[in-house]
Length: 168
Image (cartoon, rainbow, N blue to C red; front, top):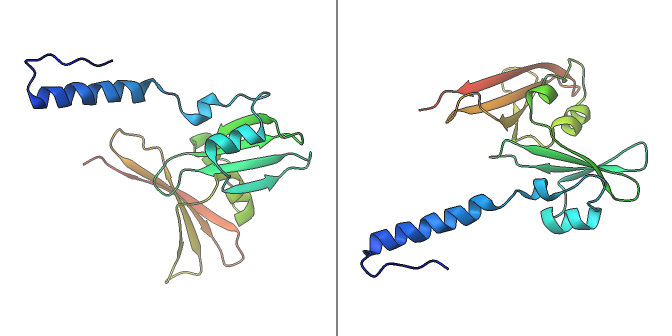
């Protein structure tokens, strides 16, 4: 229980209460950290995270569930469950390792399955192409970064790039 000293002015009381709240919030773990491969079930995951943004069927009878933080977050989690509905793996896919996997010629479905739902889709007025954008982790604190995948009219990757906005 938080106790106030009688001599504390209202501003000091507010700051003490605010610091206590921050301490409590900082002690909690994220919902993803609470999930355990080999233990967590589909029911538990839905109870903690809600319905996935997309469910991708896998060849082995399992599914991969997509939980995207776009448009303003910098994470997309792919949770793979076996046919019995038990979590096998969970991966944050908006990482340099995953972004580097995209190749010229990939389809929109292949890209979406790897990176999750994009932040935005932009149709170029000057070129016959569509650009998907994801907000990703910036290299510098306070900066913003975006990853772009460019598709031709047939829906095939033609190039990728990354844009970093420097901190203000």
